Image 1 (spheres, rainbow over the protein chains, first blue to last red):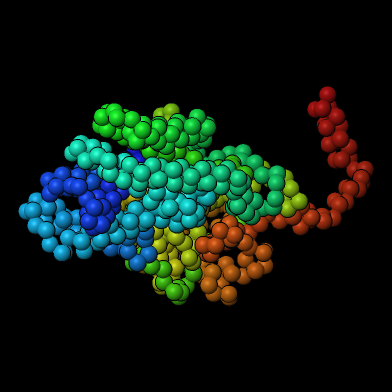
Image 2 (cartoon, rainbow over the protein chains, first blue to last red; image 1 turned 180 degrees about the vertical axis):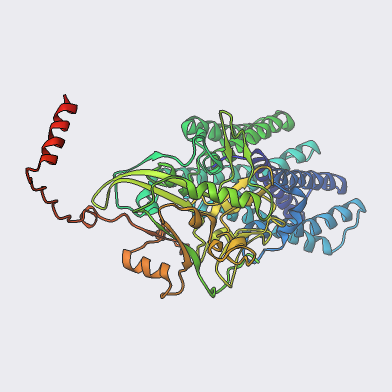
Length: 312
Length: 246
């Protein structure tokens, strides 16, 4: 599948934003937060900024961005619509929390809003994963593991950002670093299972099924047009598969191994936390972008069976 | 609404005879011609006369070489939307622009509400939906909904443009939900099949398989050798034949 940059930015940026929102409000709801009203407010604003940048970016690949509001209407059947509704709904508790912290109001309702915002973040990211997991046309996406990976990577990038913001506000020694390390290991484990699964199966569907003209011995001698058409450009993206091995290695290195090493140094040494967390976050961001790019580029679409592929 | 209807009154669709399709692309061009000038905006083309032409087409013909127990030879293979009974291309649509009509089963895109997110094309295993880069919306076969019910055109033209254009009669249009219709009869007679039934969208369009070699070779009586009467006229022609052959 062709990796549209707007969608890569959307899923990574909004994913990190929802992850940050999730951990920030959970830590607050647990009553163990060391944040002041101001540091909470600015961290929440960072989360909402990442989410908003992501959501706006997702409209850039639309043919008619001005009609994007229509996408809230079909939540009964469409995961894309559900994602839009969940994203919009999450703004309500998150926005109220921002307002309360700005006005320095500590009320019992804060915990309720925290929980609603956390649920909203999980549901939105889950819906994002389900947009892909519900497509039976793409075997690399059509698995239960996919929404779990979206959630795990959202949690990982969010935890790393929370750790970074904590360090920026001089909040150190918290248990967030262990949370981040746990997320990194969990997400890496899921990605390893994912790659083993997609490499281990040859594809359920064959050209023989698609064409209905017997097994074997089928060769496309004349494609419908002289140059690649929309379907071939969108669904038949090949670049990622050629470089998949190297890109996967980069992804593991940048997204998981390097941040884990920096965080281990943070625990073991007395170096200034920001000095370690800034590069860790940058490496993770690059790794996450490579991960999302590969998620698209490695996905094979069954319509390519009509264009000369044997299996998908 | 992007929820599918429980059932449709009719199942309008195409029957394509792979035995007689010659791959002439007449259905492709007539489809483009009708649908570029009819409802909605034109089907855009990019660099049409240049080195890298591309554009939105609703019907495309592939050509395959098949050599197996089932069939041996060249097969020209027209492929367009199959107007499936349970397609995800409808249910994934976030805006309700993609819908299946309860009255006749035709799957359509409303160009006024489509946001061009392309998700429906990702959900289609047949590659039947194409994005129109100029119009910013998805385009697909409409089964010429603006012809088949159109009372302002002659009755013989009230069939899809591709069916009307096919010079070999390889395409037929009708109600595949009615077992007595001509299309259903031909499907029953020729073991017509749906594309990619394993995928489970329940396509409505049917394909008639190429006939087996043994079905095709007719037994023709050998021509009788002409009798020689030995007339003067025959001798003249025989001489002329020899003289001219020299």
